[in-house]
Length: 595
Figure 1 (spheres, helix red, strand yellow):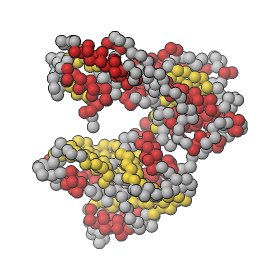
Figure 2 (cartoon, helix red, strand yellow):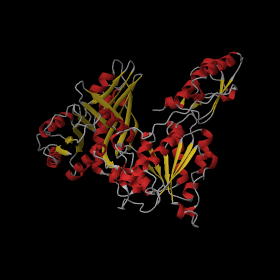
Figure 3 (cartoon, rainbow, N blue to C red):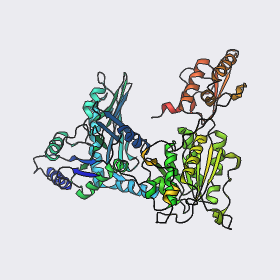
Figure 4 (cartoon, rainbow, N blue to C red):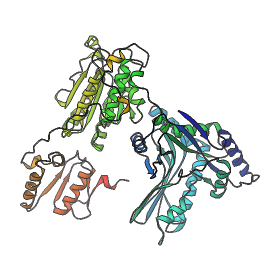
């Protein structure tokens, strides 16, 4: 693929901007009193095959669900898409909140390195100067629309760290009640463009940008959002791309803030860091046949099938035997990897993710006692019907039960607590890779079926465990997988589970039975309604395991009936008051009250 970087004469323009910013401080520059300017770079790519803009946005969301994803598609097929970490403002019920985001560091390879990079950023005089300019200008802009003027602006967070998939930033959050007569349009006009995408002072920075940048930014760095009857929310359209109508030409946009203390080479590296997520998604991925050995081809297929089946988070406890699976998860463009050395903690992290999202997370571990540490999480997942995938590496048959802790028999280690289990043969042993793909499809059906729970996929691997080259029978082993890379659909689409019938007893009613038992749910609901009508007083017991919609439904039901409620701590409900009764406005879903 061809690429072409455009900035104000590339890295030299950043050096010029640093010089101008330095001169502005001593009053010798015509741009005085310029303190910061944000220069943008446009990178043009020509792709070997067209990209689907909506698929690109979906991949960005899978990698960084905490960011704002957006897509604006023109009638001629051109699309402006992106994934931005920066919220311009949100407004609801006469209150507006905005953010200051500046300074950038990469994410670390582990928690220690991540924290060290964040600490370095927090102590950097250059990063603090850039951040302080943005924060104080956002504070001033909010003060022009706030009730009480500048004194009405409150700092919810003066300085912290905002972490996203590949980068982390300095971050502040400010809020204010709007003055009478001020609307969301006034907030938008006061804030845009912020020093985070323009510079400071605004007029001097805009003049510097127009003089330096050889291209029109278009929609890049503009406000992107929505306005409702009594609320609005806008993000800043950075970390973005413009896709041509044919889909094979794409321009990537990113910007960098320049102050007097900036290092031009470091700023250029920051630009590369900001475009890396999009570049990784657009890069041509190697095929299964390109894998250096059979282990890696199998692992890429397994992880790819899991992602296609809805498993997007991989919790990795590092170990030698699980290296192929770990590398496959790390290389996948949309998979999110969480690393922790303690398998027990990681198992409960994945369990919590499954309970909260309703989607399974995969736990990747090495062999032996590492697998045994997952048993507590597996038991709880079984009891709470929470999806949990246990993706364990293992030795081949000839190396099992050889007297070491890592060679124990782990095939059925979770016993009756696993909804489904499969022991995959070592790659290259003669069983084609499509057998593994079909087994993964079966595992996914059990994970997300009407009765979710823990699923165990045990993967045998022989040496080499790393990406070193080793001969393998590519045509034989990949038979039937032709074109797998050219589609995003699972290799095997299994039939849905048959809905189980519900018992007539009251204890059998649950939110999942209402959803899954389509043939009998109407009769079940009628029976439940009759039972409720016959009761003079009732007690509503709300258990855990549901999602946000279940919690909201339970809260509404309690209000309608006027019944007392006993709410499990994991139910998503919070009860106020000490009299045990629920009156209007005293019960709410904790999930709906979070920001």
